Amino acid sequence: AEPDGSMTVEHGTPAPPPPPMCDMPQLVNQKVSAARTLWTTEGFASAKFTALPPSQGGNSDYKVGWQSLVGGQQYLCSASVTVAQAQP
Image: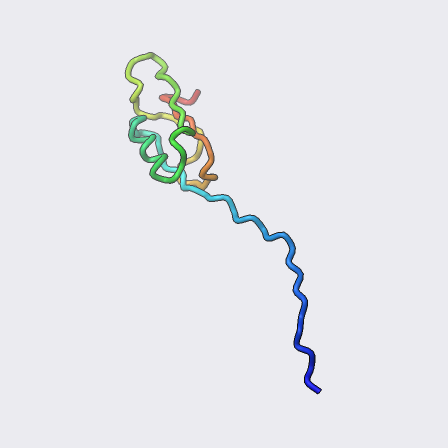
């Protein structure tokens, strides 16, 4: 007699796909406008980019001296970043 070749396979809930990761660019020493462009080019949302106002007033397109996320690391693409002229 031929063996019975049927098999029952149970499927559990599939694992959700991992959330997308984006590479954090180095924003220090960039102008705010260039830093924002680097941020969005890597896949982060423009709305998640915050530039603190310059400490002495003046030009809001200052050279970034501090960023809240470490450049060269990977973060969720939904992450937020804050930049400032100096560490707040």
